[in-house]
Length: 245
Image 1 (tube, rainbow, N blue to C red):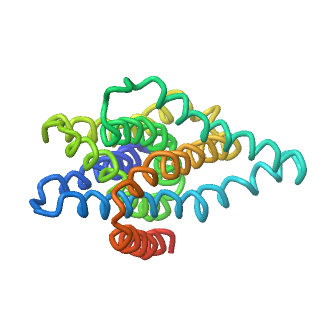
Image 2 (cartoon, one colour):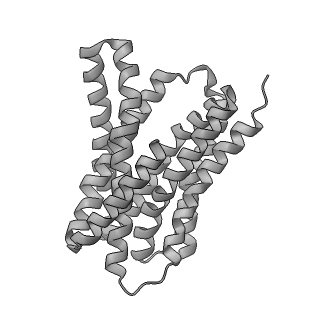
Image 3 (cartoon, rainbow, N blue to C red):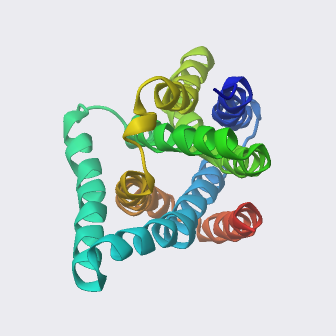
């Protein structure tokens, strides 16, 4: 049996990179509103871009190949919608007296846990099969986990959470990645396949787009800092292109 040590370490490294997003809560600025807008805009752009140009194109062909064009598209759409609606249901469970920033932070944390779990499986399976492929995937995931750390840490911190609490929540989100890898190695390797991962990634893309449009974008438009929104989205597109390439 192959050694799982390096694949598990790569998934751990990819997950821990989420904590790098917490660097933003240590940046002191007088323009707090503009800083929050820029941070959220970067995260929004990356989540939408990766969902549309990475997760969906990666998953859709596999489902269509399995079920045919007509049923494949319907099944894919329904899976995406389930993820989209999940955020709406989740938001209703958070107390209404909490600030919008707190809601965004908590919803982001839960969404990223669900996002990182299959990523951990993907990194582990890739590295277990081909260490070079696993390393490349690890680096790509590390890069896009940083803005995911931002979307958890910045809203929570500016909603009044302490730095310690914010770091713990962000770390908890990142650790779901090596947990996914470990479970894959111990229990799931017999049932995990491309088709199941495709369902999970489509569901996650629905989560991320719902979070971006229904929560983050609404918060950004309230602040009316259009210049910083545009700047953040431009930065996110450049960063996302670098990740995907």
